[in-house]
Image (cartoon, rainbow, N blue to C red; front, side, top):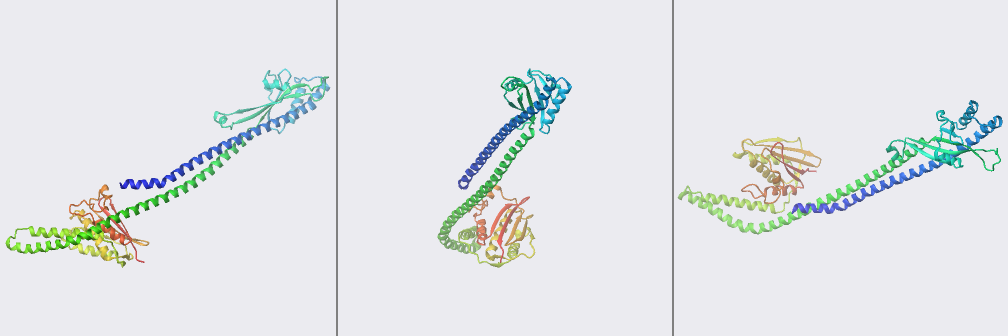
Length: 477
């Protein structure tokens, strides 16, 4: 039942923060996804604008090239030679000079000029000269005085999928127009087709870098926001957990207080009624023991009655010590002096003379603020528990003291078999004991005394064997 009560408050306390974490993570994922989508759309929009600008740029180049070819090549050649024959080296060289000087420094990769029969008559790549039907549908549109452009991208499937191809080129087909009316036709006549191929990979790479910068920046900002929110939520969780633990401790103390209150009321009412008859029984048994020593010296019945009466009186005393409130008479005192008084008292016992005691005291520790009589009783119970757990011939107890700002520590480590982990969880439960003649109140009495001094006590298993009791008490100001 206790385990369930501990889990339920934790879950109820942290459940809102679990929802907050889920909402935080989902919100950040949605925001990051939306940011990436918006960045991709913006990049696509920028690419579209760049494509339109590139097309317009190519159209201007074509118009300028058309003007220069007609003005500097077509018109002079027709005027002087009567017709254009690019197979003649002089005409080809003149056209090549016009094209290269016109497109110089404009990053044009390739220029092809088609004749009216769809045959390449001029090209920066001389290997393409004479190639037939190379213009395709774009050539047909150019012959109809329509300017068309297309985008050519090259790269692996990943580069093409994420829109950052290795190479990006724009190809523009435009009619080569007759600028001066040489015939009786009203419209300007198409005398060929110009194809311009321009590499715009650098521009597209800049767009991709911009897109990557936007995505990385947004992801970084989202990550920072996530870490901040995560820190806030984690801090809130810690606060809720601490409050839940404090509430559980208070509830546990309340239950123990109610339990002790019931025991105290019962003990106060019963102890007086028991102790008076018990005292009469004990004194009568002692008197009977003297008389039986004369009549029947071998009889042990009176001695048994005395021993059992003494044991019952000790049990009643334990009940009273455990149940009544501990009010310590606090004053500065030396912790090591109290321990030495316990050792001096116990060393006079014949049963404990073979147990070795090792002292590891810190030099010049400060005094503690305590009640010497109550601490003497607590340390005595600790020693007795250690003696009972060890082998009387090879036992060893190590006593250590040390100081930290505001507190003095005392550690008692024996060489007994230690405490089973399951039993270790129950040692503070009142009336729980593994001894046949024990009441299960000894450790409770020790804990009450230490808590009355505003101290702490902790019991663990020592390595490689044995039990360690560590006590922390406030130092005297």
